[in-house]
Image (cartoon, rainbow, N blue to C red; front, side, top):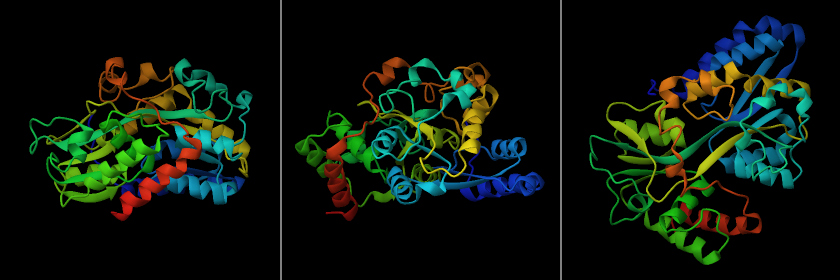
Length: 351
């Protein structure tokens, strides 16, 4: 499904309108719910509906990469009631004691979660998180400039084969993961030699054709504007904005499959409201509306029949198993995180 571009200022304006419309209820209750999630990741109409139903005010804070989110939650987690985070970050936060164990009796709609998402590797007992959306990382490109584009991580990162101006994703694990896949490695390797190899591949990609490192929505915008011919992005960010001259595709080497999960920080000051929000998102109708709005796949089995049929049939949103067989989810690499940090620092510094 292709939808018109939605800029963050427009989203914030719409969200502000929703807040204003529910102001009377908020004033009566004085309650708030602080939510921290990726930018451009919820329909303002759903925020407005939740506020009206619960008679509270939602304070929405957003981030552009996992590293920023983890740093902020680690230092000020008690200011948030709900944090939507990447799968591998959940595992790390569990180990650090930053997340509250969920009382599923307070989230009856948790029963709507599809079986494959109920006890994921990043939360094997299903005690600390519930899935929000899932999707893939791939390449958004200009079909008018590259009609015979061969979708490959190696081609985009290799200075000898870069097809034109490119933008890379400003996300440590995702981009290093892409470089590892380009070399036939696991995106979860803990091998120092393989990580050094991936780092060299990314450093080599810093040619005159590299426009920079951007968050996924901005990468898509660069391609849409014609500044870049190829960019790395998450599928939903691309699909809501594609036009007749752009498309999204998964690289031949495989990709990273991700799940974004809803969590409640251990220091959440409004846990009852947080439970209400998680239950609201997992409602069948709400889940379908959310997926339709942001063009990501829903992990909610009750929502799937209600999702727009064009989306359900789009392999860019729901890839066939054959496309996912060579792909992987990111895992917590534990002590090897230091190695990833070192590689990332060198790549971003350009040396």
